[in-house]
Length: 124
Image 1 (spheres, rainbow, N blue to C red):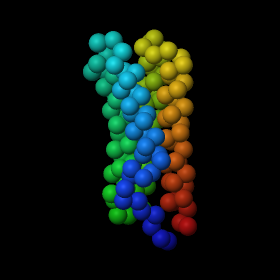
Image 2 (image 1 turned 30 degrees about the vertical axis):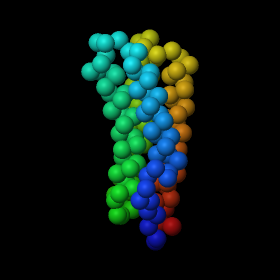
Image 3 (image 1 turned 120 degrees about the vertical axis):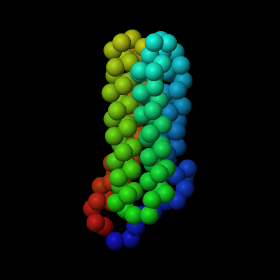
Image 4 (image 1 turned 45 degrees about the vertical axis):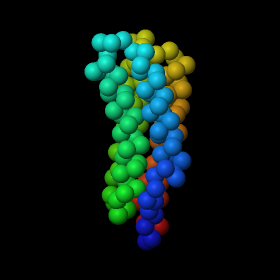
Protein backbone atom coordinates (compact mmCIF):
# COMPACT_ATOMS: atom_id res chain seq x y z
CA UNK A 1 0.00 0.00 0.00
CA UNK A 2 1.43 3.43 -0.88
CA UNK A 3 1.94 5.62 2.13
CA UNK A 4 -0.06 8.83 2.15
CA UNK A 5 2.46 11.28 3.53
CA UNK A 6 2.29 15.04 3.86
CA UNK A 7 5.40 16.84 5.08
CA UNK A 8 3.93 20.33 5.28
CA UNK A 9 0.92 20.45 7.62
CA UNK A 10 0.23 24.07 6.66
CA UNK A 11 -0.95 22.81 3.27
CA UNK A 12 -3.67 20.74 4.96
CA UNK A 13 -7.09 22.33 5.31
CA UNK A 14 -7.63 20.50 8.59
CA UNK A 15 -4.47 22.03 10.04
CA UNK A 16 -5.59 25.52 9.02
CA UNK A 17 -9.05 24.94 10.51
CA UNK A 18 -7.51 23.66 13.73
CA UNK A 19 -5.35 26.79 13.97
CA UNK A 20 -8.41 28.98 13.41
CA UNK A 21 -10.25 27.06 16.11
CA UNK A 22 -7.38 27.57 18.55
CA UNK A 23 -7.46 31.31 17.83
CA UNK A 24 -11.19 31.36 18.56
CA UNK A 25 -10.67 29.44 21.81
CA UNK A 26 -7.98 31.88 22.92
CA UNK A 27 -10.21 34.87 22.17
CA UNK A 28 -13.22 33.44 23.99
CA UNK A 29 -11.32 32.23 27.04
CA UNK A 30 -9.78 35.68 27.59
CA UNK A 31 -13.17 36.66 29.00
CA UNK A 32 -13.42 33.75 31.42
CA UNK A 33 -13.30 34.52 35.15
CA UNK A 34 -9.79 34.80 36.58
CA UNK A 35 -10.41 31.84 38.89
CA UNK A 36 -10.70 29.68 35.75
CA UNK A 37 -7.28 30.66 34.38
CA UNK A 38 -5.58 27.46 35.56
CA UNK A 39 -8.68 25.33 35.24
CA UNK A 40 -11.07 25.52 32.30
CA UNK A 41 -9.23 28.27 30.40
CA UNK A 42 -6.01 26.29 30.48
CA UNK A 43 -7.70 23.00 29.59
CA UNK A 44 -9.56 24.46 26.62
CA UNK A 45 -6.46 26.15 25.26
CA UNK A 46 -4.37 23.02 25.74
CA UNK A 47 -6.92 20.86 23.91
CA UNK A 48 -7.15 23.36 21.02
CA UNK A 49 -3.37 23.56 20.68
CA UNK A 50 -3.10 19.79 20.90
CA UNK A 51 -5.33 19.39 17.86
CA UNK A 52 -3.12 21.19 15.39
CA UNK A 53 0.09 20.12 17.12
CA UNK A 54 -0.79 16.46 16.68
CA UNK A 55 -1.74 16.98 13.04
CA UNK A 56 1.64 18.63 12.48
CA UNK A 57 3.53 15.93 14.37
CA UNK A 58 1.75 13.21 12.42
CA UNK A 59 2.87 14.86 9.19
CA UNK A 60 6.45 14.52 10.37
CA UNK A 61 6.20 10.80 10.99
CA UNK A 62 7.36 8.31 8.42
CA UNK A 63 4.91 5.46 8.86
CA UNK A 64 1.19 5.22 8.29
CA UNK A 65 0.74 3.76 11.75
CA UNK A 66 2.44 6.76 13.38
CA UNK A 67 0.53 9.18 11.18
CA UNK A 68 -2.74 7.49 12.14
CA UNK A 69 -1.79 7.57 15.82
CA UNK A 70 -1.33 11.33 15.79
CA UNK A 71 -4.55 11.85 13.84
CA UNK A 72 -6.26 9.80 16.55
CA UNK A 73 -4.75 12.11 19.15
CA UNK A 74 -6.03 15.19 17.26
CA UNK A 75 -9.50 13.65 17.11
CA UNK A 76 -9.38 12.93 20.85
CA UNK A 77 -8.35 16.51 21.58
CA UNK A 78 -11.31 17.75 19.52
CA UNK A 79 -13.63 15.59 21.61
CA UNK A 80 -12.01 16.90 24.80
CA UNK A 81 -12.45 20.48 23.64
CA UNK A 82 -16.13 19.88 22.96
CA UNK A 83 -16.57 18.60 26.52
CA UNK A 84 -14.84 21.71 27.91
CA UNK A 85 -16.99 23.97 25.74
CA UNK A 86 -20.09 22.28 27.14
CA UNK A 87 -18.83 22.85 30.69
CA UNK A 88 -18.07 26.51 29.94
CA UNK A 89 -21.55 26.96 28.51
CA UNK A 90 -23.22 25.23 31.46
CA UNK A 91 -21.39 27.51 33.87
CA UNK A 92 -22.25 30.67 31.96
CA UNK A 93 -18.69 31.48 30.85
CA UNK A 94 -19.73 31.52 27.19
CA UNK A 95 -23.07 32.12 25.53
CA UNK A 96 -24.97 29.44 23.68
CA UNK A 97 -24.16 31.01 20.29
CA UNK A 98 -20.42 31.01 21.02
CA UNK A 99 -20.59 27.43 22.28
CA UNK A 100 -22.40 26.41 19.09
CA UNK A 101 -19.82 28.16 16.92
CA UNK A 102 -16.98 26.38 18.73
CA UNK A 103 -18.75 23.03 18.47
CA UNK A 104 -19.29 23.50 14.72
CA UNK A 105 -15.63 24.40 14.13
CA UNK A 106 -14.46 21.45 16.25
CA UNK A 107 -16.78 19.18 14.28
CA UNK A 108 -15.22 20.40 11.01
CA UNK A 109 -11.76 19.62 12.36
CA UNK A 110 -12.87 16.14 13.50
CA UNK A 111 -14.24 15.17 10.09
CA UNK A 112 -10.91 15.17 8.26
CA UNK A 113 -8.95 12.96 10.68
CA UNK A 114 -11.91 10.59 10.80
CA UNK A 115 -12.01 10.23 7.01
CA UNK A 116 -8.26 10.04 6.67
CA UNK A 117 -8.04 7.43 9.44
CA UNK A 118 -10.62 5.28 7.65
CA UNK A 119 -8.53 5.52 4.49
CA UNK A 120 -5.25 4.74 6.28
CA UNK A 121 -6.76 1.74 8.03
CA UNK A 122 -8.63 0.42 4.98
CA UNK A 123 -5.49 -1.14 3.54
CA UNK A 124 -6.04 0.62 0.20
